[in-house]
Length: 98
Image 1 (cartoon, rainbow, N blue to C red):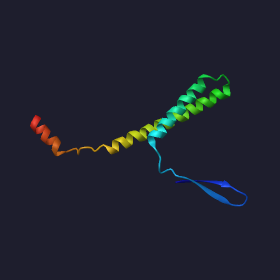
Image 2: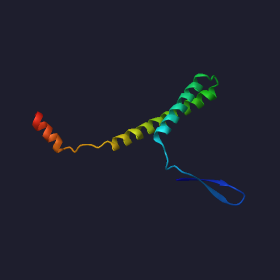
Image 3: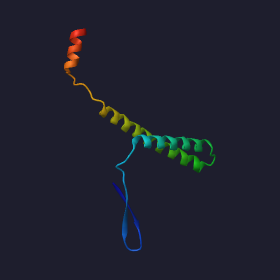
Image 4: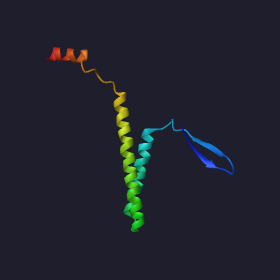
């Protein structure tokens, strides 16, 4: 859980944000859409400052997309049960089909 604080007159009040319901597929999709929007914006600007801004945004979103997809790959690998290196099934199959 992440807590953000905003300052009132004399005290700080925590604003909590629940990150436990992080949906990886949804984040990947939103990042992909934001990346498409950034590319479209880059294609339609002529001011140097905006071009630089879109380049930074595209690089940032690309890194985020790569990170999220690698997380998804890691999670998919962890959910698939793997056979032991010296599996009795493997030995049986190699003995029968040898």
